[in-house]
Length: 373
Image 1 (tube, rainbow, N blue to C red):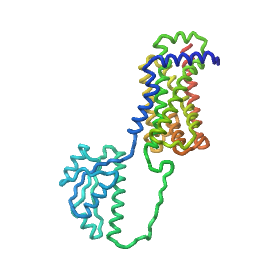
Image 2: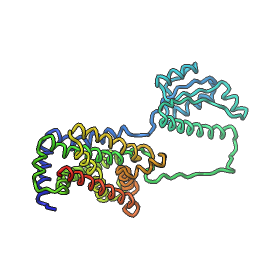
Image 3: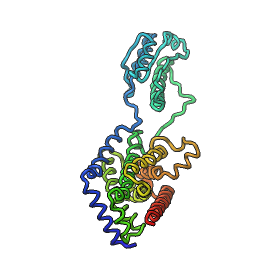
Image 4: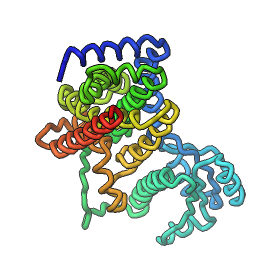
């Protein structure tokens, strides 16, 4: 390994990268803009659920039930309708999220000690959101039932009770940003490193300078290393920048060691940069490299556990996630951010990332050696 040759190639890469003024905002401003957009958009918190009510009972009990929904910080009663058929039209137009229909015998059944039924209509076209809204609705109903039973049966009933004391670790308020923002950090680093490195070799081909590099004494490993080091430094700088932004802007706690996180990102980058160089070596144009990028980015995102739990996937697909560097890095970054875990717990993810990085870099070097031949 001739380090002076590698150093000069690294210097050439930096000059070529920053000479184009269009690249400068992409390297600094784009990660922060994407961080803000994704940080606020990617969330599963349910805060404002609009409700339409058809109260056919019109009794104190039915009005109290409607007030219980309206008093909740999650629900907001926006429509009070006389006809149940109007609920269908509102849900069809997505004017409301939930329809609540109270039958005429609601209060009469309660006073007789019988079970009173109400109908809750939920827009199920978005199944995940519908499930969360149903869960919140049942929570309001449980609280309403408890208050109503205490008023009807004016005696203290404490036998057979189970008093569950829930304590949520690592994310006490169950804020979804604590879960998603660290994942966004990992995704942005992967996205930018793949995009820039996938253009590294193909740009030389289009500019006509590839032949000049081939006739130099550079070996395949020196060429790959010289092409990789600039993007490693840039990606590490971006990593530190977005971590600091997530910590200060979104108030995401950093329970673990930031240096350990940077070391993990270095191993993670060995995989993503290697894949980017492999794409660049097999592509003939930058447009072809860009299209190949999407072939990798979408599966990496879908099979990473960023949104969909890996445990819910079929067993063969779960095995495929072991080939996804993003899935391992998400476990590391969330563990360091939220739990403060270290290498003693995260060593399997470190080992798999290192193995993937070694295999991908070996493939990139092998592919470039064949092109030199």
